[in-house]
Length: 502
Image: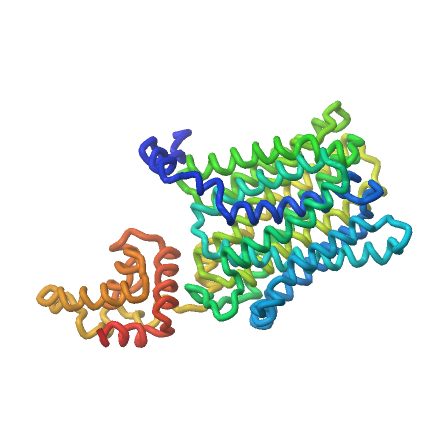
């Protein structure tokens, strides 16, 4: 019974056999790794005083300005999706994200020079990096909207590990070398999503259009989840560093590679071994890991443990799982990446920024006795556990999306297609099946989508399709959404007309 959630050996062997070198090394992975490495270098590296020309740490106010600007970009993209797409499909403006990021990086490097006021370079650094990195994040959101979850579950952890390796290597180099790498990383990352993957390319339409959705309900659910976890993670990290008197360099630099290696092993291992490999199940697993390390805080308080390996495992698991949840949600339900990543990643950023503000106040106002440390750990653990209540289930996503899965098929014995019905189907099976197969080939339907299409055309309701194909309600709804989108129809009558014309 203890191992009932683990796959059998045959399934495990099959999953491993499906892996290849490209599962761990491809353009998408490298591009995303470059972007995450830039984040590590600019903020973690700057906090470690190894990035600026003079070796001084960038003030925390610059980080807050960048975070707030990033939130504004992400939320604006979610609310004004059509305008944002028109803006970014311009041949020149497509490159605005990496260009702004590079300019912001240059301002960070020159922040403490005597020729330019630090206030001006700090402000420009925060605004430009927030604007640029937000656009790049949305670009990779669009990429992973079209990547199957089985690939995403491996690629995102692996890319984060590569980013940690780049970060740790650059921390051993002089500031000038770190600066040069940080200038190149956004450009290399942008080359991948703009040139290799053709994101926002003028005249290029997505293979499957986004499904309309209730943005307010989605924002509340996914936003609350991301905000709670982001706040708890940021708060507990700052408290951990304060009570153990750990300098930023000692916290981030030694443990980054090891923590990412542990994170990658845990998440990729879970993906291969677990029967339920959805991100919802994986999210529960990650929340357990985060709660475990948060509860270690009172145990480690005042000890000789001076690096942040334990806390960084939690930090990296949190960042990776949120990205995976957003990617799987947008892929499975064919939602707009602008809305999903704009709201989701924006709330994560807002939560981390709020955690930074709260922790600054808490550290200055409270004396951390053993009781206070235990209380802080308890509060952060509860926030992490509460976040699971807001994770969207299949039924929630069905309610949020506006497509009526039963359109025209509310009655089991209602009107069917001209070739439907058990009697005619039995006497003349070939013409109907041939028409369905022609439609499936014309619009690129998968074998499973073809099965669902044939039953739906015969007048089966969603409930009957679930029974006949042994599928969940959410899976059937997702297949129907894909069919409607690929066939470019909006009602069942339009759907039947296209089959009848064959």
